[in-house]
Amino acid sequence: MAAVVTKKNLVLGFTTGEGKNFNLTINTPKEGLDGTTIGTAMDQIIAANALGEESIVNNKVSAKYVIQQVDEIKL
Image 1: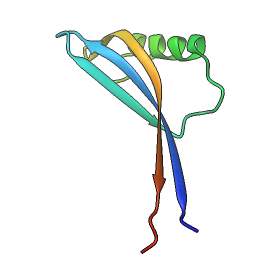
Image 2: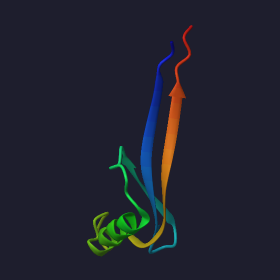
Image 3: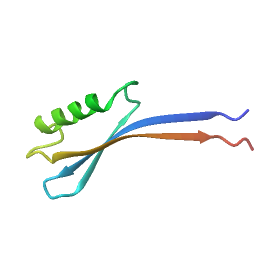
Image 4: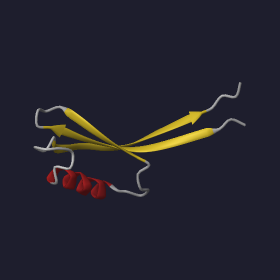
């Protein structure tokens, strides 16, 4: 039987001061997070300038789970 590996990442989307998109990927996020909790955390990241000096990100845009399933093929 082939091994199946499933990975779940949380991708947080922001915009920068220059209007460019910036994604922050969190590997193996805590289960059960809702939109309010994630939005609050994103606001705190922005307010704390947690991603660099001069607040590299200034606006939250999106949040999504990206689920990847890998099915190993036995040769």
